[in-house]
Length: 64
Image (cartoon, rainbow, N blue to C red; front, side, top):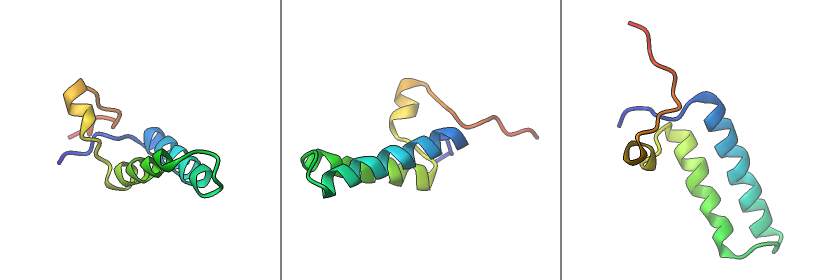
């Protein structure tokens, strides 16, 4: 697994994940809010399995 999630993308994923989980815990949305765990997980690992399928990469290129 090569890192394909950049810094700003990681921050946004964590925020969205926490908001979704918070809304689920307060009863604002249903069980779909637990998908926030996926956002937090992909931010923690730095890899999104959907990105290679879409040809995306938000991680800055590493300079040799």
